[in-house]
Image 1 (cartoon, rainbow, N blue to C red):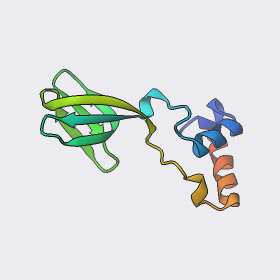
Image 2: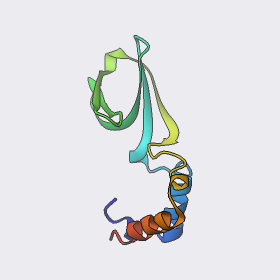
Image 3: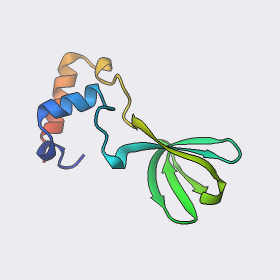
Length: 104
């Protein structure tokens, strides 16, 4: 989040909170992997090489051998949850936007 207030104005910050899937930076795209055993893992791609990939599933990094991957898809979904703005009081939402806009 460092530099967010420098890159985005308050209107863009508000839109990104209300609709996190509207515009997703490549580094925050959710990756879905299905292994040859049928296990599905979703999260952020941490690293990859020719032998393995590492996905952070929100709890811990998951290492998957490339040879064990049956399917790999980028989801058009942000890792930020939808409906976050609805869980806050209006003044909390405004405080959050104000705080994020100060991150220069």
